[in-house]
Image 1: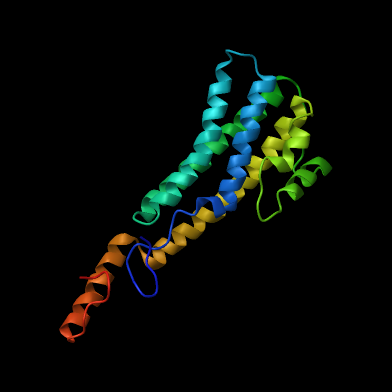
Image 2: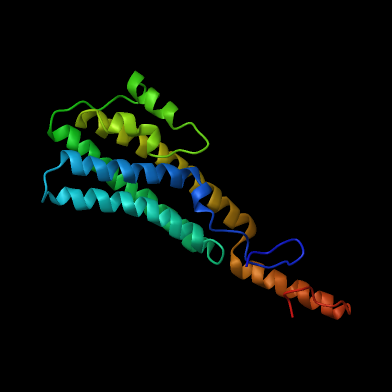
Length: 200
């Protein structure tokens, strides 16, 4: 149970990964990658498993990190970095796909890349935002769309990791919160105050 103003605790609210824009974008990257591999890679190609697993790792480690954050900020930071590394691996796979086939990689500021980035500037993003393009366009276009989305997701994860690091430096982790909660309990007991609900 998460703490409330009437029932304080040392485990903060956590686990709302679906509200994280980084998770939403990572989920879109996974959905696109799964369909990309089904459409454009030959059955039996080992790259399929590698790309799908990298996309899944990027998504799932955000989930696990968010769930672990209540009791371990260190684990949350570690898992967010694992997610970031998995997406970087996937990014290289998409670039390799384009390069070995002599297909064009969109420039960062190209009209096409800017259009894709604008599609992601919403409060909640799903695969449906991109289905029209990813379901009908040739592999060169879909790979470039995926690359743009991975860059956006990595940017969000970089910001998220930096914020987590700053929060940890300022507030510590659960050990510090447990110690503080215990000291507050002892102080109240020494002053003859009744312990608050949940502290008995």
